[in-house]
Amino acid sequence: MTTRDRPTVRLAARADAPAIARIYNQGIEERIATFETEPRTPAEIAARLAEKGDRFPTVVVERHGAVVAWASAGPYRARPAYAGVAEHSVYVERGARGGGAGRAALEGLAREYEARGFWKLVSRIFPENTASLALHARAGFRVVGVYRRHGRLEDRWRDCVIVEKLLGAAAAVSRRGRGSGATRRRRRPPTPGS
Ligand SMILES: CC(C)(COP(=O)(O)OP(=O)(O)OC[C@H]1O[C@@H](n2cnc3c(N)ncnc32)[C@H](O)[C@@H]1OP(=O)(O)O)[C@@H](O)C(=O)NCCC(=O)NCCS
Image 1 (tube, protein in one colour):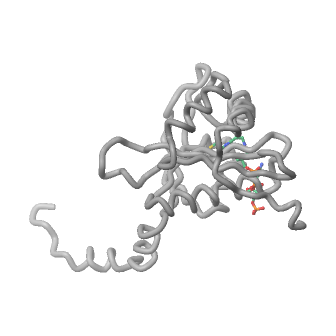
Image 2 (tube, rainbow, N blue to C red):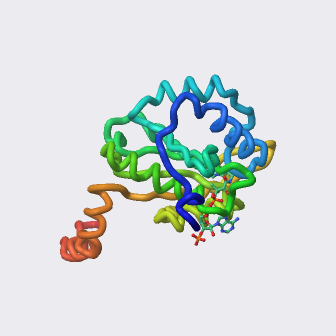
């Protein structure tokens, strides 16, 4: 891959709304990426970008000067305890899939959220979406488990695979603390009656 072919990743601006909407609508149409069924307009996307502001940025990937992918996130839960957890999505233009744009978008998103103090990205993926599962594994996400019959899409039950990636301080704690929690748990005396 030459420097010219390499994708560039940057924060999305209002002017990217038509490209983001076009790429999102391809994913919605395919019914393998999301429970969403209604296409989005560029105006809706532009409003969403403004509403999220710099706290929940969207990143876009450009190749040969055109936006070919985007990744974005939003709040996971309203409770303050979850303030550092964001729930994300990633979409690549149909004709640009399989060329590294999804990975560039997801890794770019993780960098931006880590820089803003987020400690975790999470998402839900349909088990049939092997491309997304492969992408997330490659980008350092782990599978937490599977929600069975989590939602209904066009009268069919759909399972969801939950994935997560720790960022920043949480990732560092998890690397340092691996094994020590188990040791502490073994030493704790048994609770009477348990
Ligand atoms: C899922 C999606 C974002 C992946 O993006 P992409 O640009 O095609 O993926 P990349 O080229 O960056 O590939 C990342 C890794 O996943 C693997 N991968 C990509 N597509 C794959 C497929 N169809 N089957 C198996 N592995 C695949 C690649 O081989 C690569 O691994 P490698 O680095 O070991 O070679 C893209 O297919 C897409 O937009 N799909 C529709 C929308 C969607 O499903 N979004 C996710 C919602 S949860």
